Image 1 (tube, helix red, strand yellow):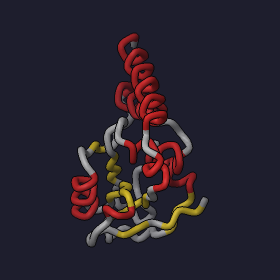
Image 2 (cartoon, helix red, strand yellow; image 1 turned 120 degrees about the vertical axis):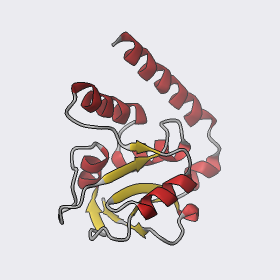
Image 3 (cartoon, one colour; image 1 turned 90 degrees about the vertical axis):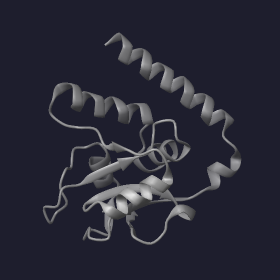
Length: 148
C-alpha cells in the first residue's frame, strides 16, 4: 500500500514537471478517439467515454467486448487525453485501474508503447478503442465523434 502511494506521488511530481516543461506546440496538437472499423458506435458522450476508459463499461451495445488500449501514463498524449477528454489526471485513472485489478473485480486497459502500436492494435482488434494524435491516424481505424 505504501509503495502504491509513493508511486502515485512520484507520478504526480513527474506529471507536474512534464506539464511545466512541455513545449507549447504540444498544447496545440489535436487528438482523436479511434475505434476498430467494426465498432457500430460512431458517436459517444464524454460520460460514456469516461465509463469505457474507467473500465466500468465492458461491452458495446451490440454485445462486442470493449478492448481498451492506452499509452503509458507518462506519454504526453495520454496526459492530454486524460485531462482534456476524460477530465481526470493520469494518476487518478491508474489508481482506479489498480483498484479493479487488486480487488479482483476487473482489469486494467492494455498498454501499448507507441502511437504506431496503438494504430496497429486498434485496427486489428475487434471492439478496440484508443486515441491518437490526428497526424498519426491512418487507414484501418474509425474516428469517434465525442459529444461534450
